[in-house]
Amino acid sequence: QVQLVESGGGLVQPGGSLRLSCAASVNIFSFNPMGWYRQASGKERELVAVIRNSVRTYVDSVKERFTISRDNAKNTVYLQMNSLKPEDTAVYYCNGRHGGVTEYWGKGTLVTVSS
Image (cartoon, rainbow, N blue to C red):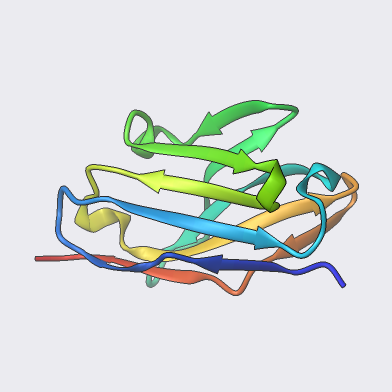
């Protein structure tokens, strides 16, 4: 069974950093694309960062602050988040299209940026 499990969320002060992890139950080579979305309270879910055919793409609001990466040996995708702002507060979801066809979502991890 294909599963994506996020971890690493929490409470952080503005300007701080967090690293989110997304562990896949199968080889992550089988996912393309694979990335992170977020949904803030009262807002629509938005794409934050994605790896598609080895190309990394970011939403403008996180460029130069967030980095998406993957560790193929651990079947894990990461989202390194630096210089966090209150507006980054959201539930972050891992997403991947298995075999380029079937879309899977994790259950999400909450990131709260507040002093």
